[in-house]
Length: 294
Length: 336
Image (tube, rainbow over all chains, first blue to last red; front, side):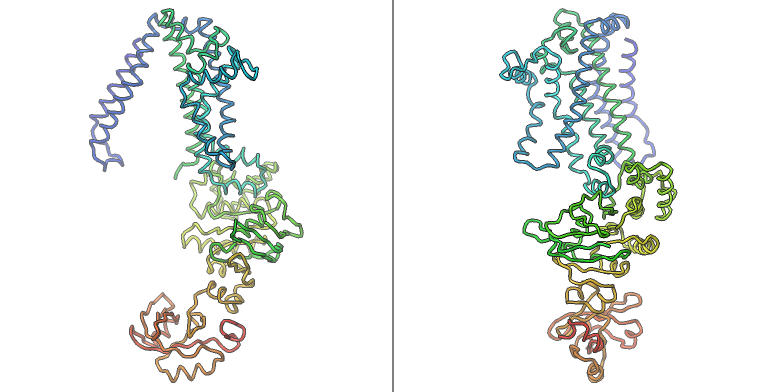
């Protein structure tokens, strides 16, 4: 409890500190002095109200029974199982997305075929749709009354399909603009040096796509571990089998165990944050190499 | 040696290559010169296999490579905008062709070091392309292309993206490099000065066709037609004929000009003109002239000649062509 309040306060003071900082000799000094501290203060306030304070409050709630209580809530067999299912399925979804998303982006950028614009518009649909609609859509095709006799209801493959459906646009939309901007002559240069198409893709194209690919995959993963609506119908909510963390949280709220719910929420939060942070570092590193000293 | 036979390439209705036939001798440095849209880049890319011909054949070193992929043609290609592998160091860029051929590490290291020394980039091994200047990047691209021991080296406007000073330096450097390495080299350029400076053979292209092939002196002194003449070097129109500005002599006296002109067979005659402007460009002096009928042309004289004439704006002079009778005979444009 003490740690979180301290961190919140430190954040508060740092915003006010920036606002009252004496002018430092820095290249951006020529700009009006007032604008910068005001901007930073506003951003700090906005992020505090919307993101940091609610997250801190959640963390405080989760520690209502002390660190031991938090640990017990997260490591309860059903809670742990739900986290395991969530992370495993989300990871599988992210990996397949990375491959298929890159392939889709490649086809959309490099190939010409009739209906390309429609397909391009279609990519965003799973994301734009209310997720519960996604769940119904999938249930009508892969559910108990499946017209094609594929029954994925209440199975882990069912979960996987639902999450893959919802996270489809992430990789496509982050890789696509990079591919559009990519210098085709670089690929021709590799070919003239004797590189096969696959070698050219692996050694020349892929490293260029890496930052966008990593961040798109990271977003897909983060989205997948937090997904609720799309799995609510097709997932089946079977504890230790297809119950994902978000459903476990919902269930704990319903049976009036807010501490358990908060604890698993914080665990999800930590997983998402660490994932995004690590990926950002990776993506930043490969990008910096290219842009260094420019 | 590269042989192109009846090469044809269309983009829709536009004929980029219209039955082009060309021999490029082994060990030569040949320039493909022409305005934009003349097909010179298409021809080079077709030799490389980066474009597929609609018809015709391409033979490199006795091997018909018309249907062969660029990977297997034994070429090195250098692009105008460097096409550097941005995520690799200079060393990895140059080593690329050898690495994918899985050559032994020691051999690669030795070869890369040699090449970097040749192109003057030793000490830059661990830099990334973004940390190099344009000229350095292009030299890296050249080393990369040479690393795979190509049978022919193809350069597509290699100095086009560089500023004038660097361009002139790299041109000289390329010439010296070619004298050392002796690989058959084809250079695409729209800059006639560059072609005259660096190449030992020039093929002039226009509208997908080859207008003339020859060494720089032949092309400059005996152009096959008006297009080649006006594309290689500047021209002035004197009495309806194309003349090089430095082949125009000026006189203050009409009698003297006519007497001297009579000695030149088939000349356009003496033209009376008014001086519009005298421009001193270092050693040479350009005199902008205008005839009674309003036709403008320029004459190019040496500083000493200009001083002797002592011309000022608004004065009248008499211009004549100084190209001798044998030149007129050999040069159809002047023999009309």
